[in-house]
Every structure is written in structure tokens, then in C-alpha cells.
Image (cartoon, rainbow, N blue to C red; front, side):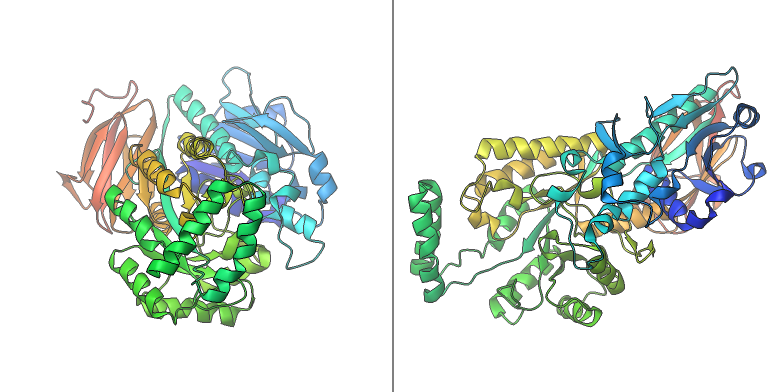
Length: 571
């Protein structure tokens, strides 16, 4: 158990601080409790003290001789909407070496991101910058507000961000790694133990979701073919022969076979069926300046119905032409009625998202959101590699946002030139390895038009499918990730000296728990029938795997502590 004590002097920012702590500890998988008095902390707990000022040596000794203690000194200005400017943000940036180099914000200078207190008998350490406020700053998209100058339609481009050169690694995940490393180190060295929910159902190293934005279908007509001649002439005079032939081949194919250039549903699905995976598709529900199709098209309706029959997830591709709740809701309802669903996810067209648009998304109560991705290169927008609930209108929203780290947009050097295939493969492999390293979500968006626009997509997409299929990953949909993250958060773990009790609020196909520290599992019992073993869990090396769990199940694990018993280890 992690106990969190927040200094009363920080009461003004209580909701922001709790929001950041809840995100961090829930993402890491720890059971936690906010306490108002140190008497509420159990002897076996890890105490995180979040203070306005650093405790004196005497205060620290009195606490840290009794509890494992991690101290973080607050920097309240990072919570205050009026305290920072873009210039102040830039001047307070500092690079620290964590799981990978990471930019943090700190008015205080420091040599190391964390230090141990070395006095005899102390079980304590200190994070030397405000990790909690740094997480909140990114969760709340505060950099955008600093640059918007009050313009509610402003969208922060990556090129304008002070974090632009640090997006290839998940900065927030790195901050979580620092906190996690300290907790694990102190627990193991102190002879106590704690438990931790692993991120993914079977303890996989990462999650992967394959998605396709249907942002253009460009049904051809004689006039549109003639208008395309100008682009073909430009390609001719820039010596892009391969690209020119690719474009001409598609138009000739349409003229002789009536096969639409961007109608690439079957191409993607054929490869996905072969790989035994499913993808998610995002459709707009009506035509507008940015969308060249509508759901009145009978051919398109047939494609959507086919995808739905194959149990592919379908979500709304939202556009910014009508930024009001009624129109957003109406467009969402069109798809819901078409699919006979109770709810669907939402993605903003081209990932052009700001606080105003996120607030509209929140008002729709979507099944999930997936509207954040870097502009030009693979990476982690705002530093997130794991799901999060956005901070909207000064409060936590009610939906999970699932990050996208790879888009077909990144394969294009400019409008007429694409990366060479080998470079594209290296780029894909690099971001995949980063996701594996940090245990995060590999969110992929290959638009329906990309099959045509990227000349080698028929080679690259099988490469992606093989890469994710041969690794230890959970290949699923963004909706399933959001559902899993919610169910995982609802699992309750209670720890005592010789027992760990796990209570399940939902049905779960799989769930994995890790015990950290010098303990051994003696037996696993059914908490509802204590005389019986619980048959749906197995343990190996203090990793407990659960399968086919039902809502209401309670599991009790009896454990041996170092030097506290001689029972036989389970498994």
C-alpha cells in the first residue's frame, strides 16, 4: 500500500495534486490511500510526503525510522494558471537522465533527480524536483494555454513546443519509472513487501492497437481526374518518376475497372485476417469542407456493415467545422444508431485538438478518445505512452484517452516525396522498441488513403503486422484498452502481514498481479469459500496470473515473509 500525505499548506491545489497522484499510482498499479494524519499510515506502507517545504532532519528521522518515506517538495507555481509564462517555462527546463533523457520543469536547480538520505536507520529518499506538478502540467496541457494568448481556437503545433525535441520518448512514463524504481528499491531493501497490478492483462510487455482514419475516399469523376493533372505535371518536372507512375497507375485502374483509388478497406483487412488481428476504423458521419464523403453512400454503408460483422471497432472521426455540443452529439448519434451500439469512441480529424475541443469530447461521454499524436514524427504527444483521463474545464474528465505514436503522415517527407522503405521500417521498429521498453501503448493510425498514397504500404504494413505479432504484446482495440484500464483500476488489493486479498468488481478474462519484496506465496484460496483453493489463479516467481475472473470473486493469498515462516512456496 502507498500512503500519500499532502501538506495542508497546499490545500488550494488539492484537486490538481490528487488528480496527478491518482493518475501516477493507478498507472503504476499500486494500491494507494490519501491520509491526513501519519497515524493512519500502516507499518508496512510506503509513505509519500508531498510538502510545501522540506522537513527538518529531526522531523524526517522521526518519520523515516518508522516508515519507508519518499519526500517530494512541491513547486506550487506549476499548478497556478497565472504563475507561468512561455518564457519562464523555457528558462526552467532541465534535462535529467531517467529511463531515457527527459525534460522536466523546475525553478530549483539540482544535480540528481533523486537522492537517498544516508543517516543510519533511515528508510527514506527524496525526489529533487516536483514530479507530481510536472505530471499535472502535461496532463492539463498547460503549455498550450501559455501560448494561446486567450485564443480558444489555438492549437499548439509541435514545432512551437519547448518539448519538441523530447517527444520520441514518453516523458511522463519516465517520471513514473523514477517513482516506481524508488518504491521497489526501498521495499526490497527494507524486508517488507507490496503488490502491484501489471499494466496489461497477461503481463505483456506492451499493448498495440491498429487503427485506420477514413479521412478521404475521393470518389473519382471525370472532373476530379482532370484536376489531378496539375499534380501529375508537378511530379514530372520534379523527377518523381516512381511517384508519378504510382499515381497514374491508380487513375488508369479506375478508368478501366471503376476501382476507386482510395477504397482500400479490403487491402488492409485481408492482411489483418491473415495475421489474425482486428483493427479499428474512424468515420465521419457527414460531408463537410474537410470530408469528401457521407454515410448516405450505399457502398460505404456496406463497407461499414462488413467491418462491424468482422467485429472491427468503429468510432467517430470528428471535424472542427461545427464546434458545438449539439452538432458533435448529433454526429456521434448517427454512427451509434447505424451500428446499434450504446457508445463509441471519438478521434479528432488530423489530431488537431485543444482544450475547447477536448471539452466538447468530454460532453459527449465517449467510450474513449484517441485524438493525440505528434504532428510530424513518431513519438509521444505531451509525453504520454499510457491511457489517461484528460483534465478538462478544471476537473478530471470521464473518458480514457489512448495515445497514437505512429501515423502514415510520418512516412511523407513532403507532399510528393516519401521516406525510402528501409528508412520507414527503421522508424517503425525504433518507436516499437521504445513502446516495449516503457511498457506503453503502440497506437498506430494508417489511414485508408495511405494504402494508395504510400507506394510501399503493401510491403510496410505486413512488416508492421509481423513485428507486433512475434513480440510479447497485447494486440487489441483502443476501446478494449480503455475498458481494461477501467476494470484494472477497480480491482482492490488489501495487504496485511501474512495475507494479500484481491477483490474483483468486474468479469475479467485475464489479470496479473506481482508481489514485490522478500515473500513467498503459500496458497491461493477462494475468499468467498475460504476452505477451498481458488482454481483460476496460478503463481510463478511472485507473479500471479488470473483467468476467467467473475465480478464478486475474492481471492486470498497466504504468504510467508522472510524469516517469518517455513511454508512451502506456491507454484
